[in-house]
Amino acid sequence: MKHFTAPMEIKELDDTGSFDGYASIFGNVDLGGDVIERNAFTEMVKNEDGNVVVLWQHDTRTPIGVASVVQDDVGLKFKGKLILDDAAARKAHAHMKAKSVRGMSIGYDVLEGGARMLDSGIRSLVKLKLWEISLVTFGMNPMAGVADVKQALQITNIREFEEHLRDAGFSKEAAKILCRSYKDLPGQRDAVREASEIDTATTVQSMVSFLEGIAK
Image (cartoon, rainbow, N blue to C red; front, top):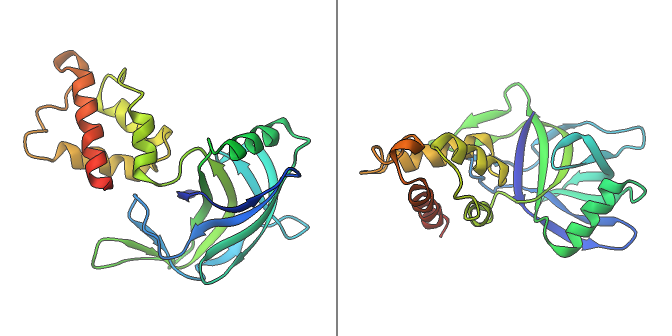
């Protein structure tokens, strides 16, 4: 299963746990270089009531609600209901109200013939199977991830930096692309080595500055 994440597009949240918005926006290129085209969701996994499961942070062990999901001209529109009898759902509800959870994400599979590479290098997704929608800490907004990275100067090498980007909300592919792009900059190849050979804090801060630059 793959994930596609975007900044939170929740239109309304009430004290009963009902909320609605968009789990994915059509035509929006994420940091992994993917774009979901209009009406790409040809299959959706639903329960007996016709609803899609809502997960917490894509954790299949932590369902927190259900949602009716449809496609419109904007994207994947949903009307969700958190199950507030569940402690995890109450936690999610509190974080949504505090805006400490800022992303909506989807779990999907690309069906046969469902992706094509554009001349720009972007992968256009046209035929997908939706498994779930999730509330996640960060959307696929570069600055959201960078803000979290700034708190992590204890990272000791490039691999840990990549893993931290993933923890901050970047996809596996996006984290690899960002780290590889940084390493390929002139003068940086020799700078990204094991922690015993470099000033780790300086290097990580330099990488943060690099990410901030491409996010502008």
